[in-house]
Image (cartoon, rainbow, N blue to C red; front, side, top):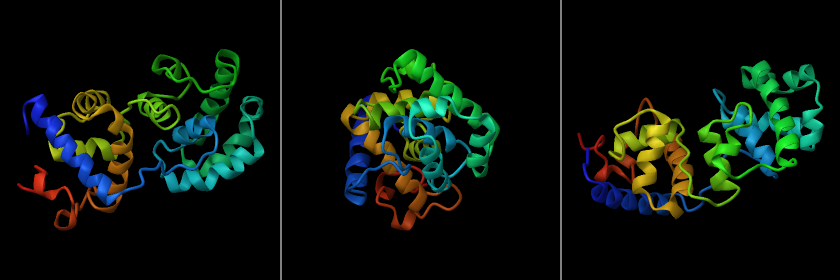
Length: 214
């Protein structure tokens, strides 16, 4: 594990450069056309694949095309639409409650500040950071499972707790690179640096990855 902030910052820049070359397009894998749709799609993605969420949201957002429509939705109807995402009743309750909070507290708009986003039912720091980065272009570390795994293997953090990983990366990754790096971590984590069988032999990060060089 590299020790100093300076060393980790230099390592972070090498990682960013390598992944930018490998994945020129840093895009969110969830489909959306409006900020509130990304907010709720991300909530649906908890313990569910993005691919499955992308199969469900077209019907959800067709049936409820505005925040107001979702706020007034029948729980049973939303449950039926999102059933295949798992934990569907809890998620349906939080989607409806979240839409009501957006209406009553934020004029139907998705807020940009972390403390405001965290007031929305079902929304944690991971989703809040995704909104801050993808919607508002702010520095944001989305500490999802891929980010946590790759950051640990690469020596950017010693932690597995999402909040601590977020803090560690925010300290060593240039602010304007943070959000896109997290998207590229997802791409690389799915294609190469998988949880069970990382393909170190074809990894663009292998030369400076602590895990690959053991």
